[in-house]
Image (cartoon, rainbow, N blue to C red; front, side, top):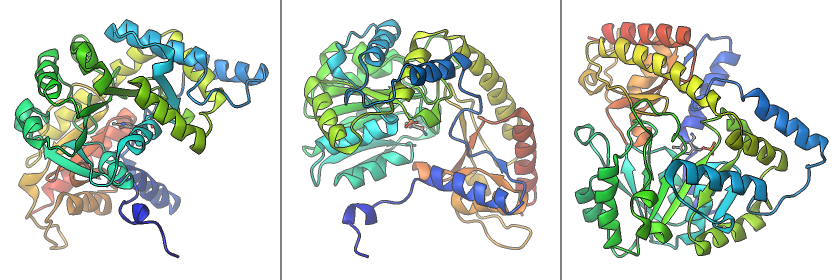
Length: 399
Ligand code: PMP
């Protein structure tokens, strides 16, 4: 069968593929310690579930406006006002089936063949493929650990060309947990003000999962003159343990939001009415769930970092946000497994962990971070402890 070039240009999401591989191995009866998980291991809060059930009871089981219910868009506007002091009218907010879909639609709405999108690395696995699927060219800009894995104004400036349409800023970042300080955002904003043809897509899906004092800001709040250049995306998946409900949102210029709505009207008509009622309850209801989760994540983060930094050959720093640790394993590449096989890459290292110790992690190259692997601590403390012990054993077995 002849498939479209856009399909042949991309690969399936490595994180979804890793989850699938773990499911298959478990189904074969193998006991896998899964440290690949990209979603909270908490259950959706009860009041959110109740809101969905009530919506069904009220008969809210039909199409909603393409861009989401007015109630949900009002809840999103309130959150942005509360959190960042940003005031967006409801018609500059659009709701879709997850932040993933919203980001894809924003790229689909703006990219023509040859348009460039600056993707700072380490990056969330999906950005380059989403750009490719929409005929664009990802321009990956490595951001080394020495820079805190963050894009510097100099690197941004030198990556910009006449063909640049977007730069993607994901903070807190998956997989590094890094976010920009207000000063760093200010410096990036200065570069962007000088290049008004470059739009900024901010992916703030981990914005509430943060371990440092205060919460990270956003570039649109730091520089209001960028308002029409910024498309801010977020959702309820991570903050409220609602990955399966598939609700995300985007906020930006009326023109861009209108274009996203036009695409959505031809793709899905609207996100699920029931999930929208649930997301409204999540955003407007009791917020203590987030703090409770963050306290648990923090303890697991500390435990994971402590265990892994003690392993000769591995390096890691505590992430400031999110629920992943990016672990350096470059010092172990070139060593041999007990079976005598040389490990050349982080991908082979991850496979070795899976095959020798049944611990699943995701190799750093999937995130544009060769020489690293990602450990998720969105899993129970017992799985984490056992997983880290087995990683230590696997490392010690290398010669
Ligand atoms: N952005 C990042 C950085 C993510 O890690 C994820 C989820 N893995 C998403 C977006 C997608 O979130 P959603 O469930 O809202 O589609």
